Length: 193
Image (cartoon, rainbow, N blue to C red; front, top):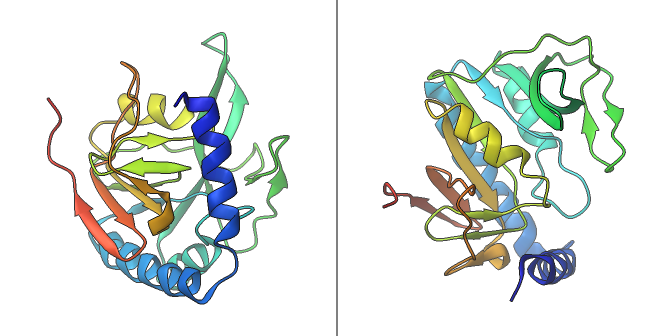
């Protein structure tokens, strides 16, 4: 199955999982496991969930309560590169997010930017994940490029159990996450060949 068809199918499957008691149970598990992980990191790079994605709003609020530095992605026109790029901007509890053309909420341009480093936990979204840590995103390649450019950061993919699969088609530019929280299980990813 090609990636375009996989994306369509994955969106439909995830939407059918909303809202259910099982989904709420998996949201709680993911929430608790991410919170345990972030104790080791100074900077938490999250994303603001939309549609039927894993609920990250609770994570954002909890991170603020625990005095974490919270960053959300913003897609901008590249000044150095010819395309668009993703950067993480620090937000505060009173930051007013703005709607991006794709529908997600992102920080205003004037929020401080910080690159990921060894003290950063990056929570990565996806439509599908396989057990090797590869993901099928929305097709822009933003997270793949970001992960490749910041290999020292800890990356964790989060998704519901219905978004897990054994294998995904992998291209040369695809990047895997280092840890997966899929529904109600944690999978540590070993280095790829």
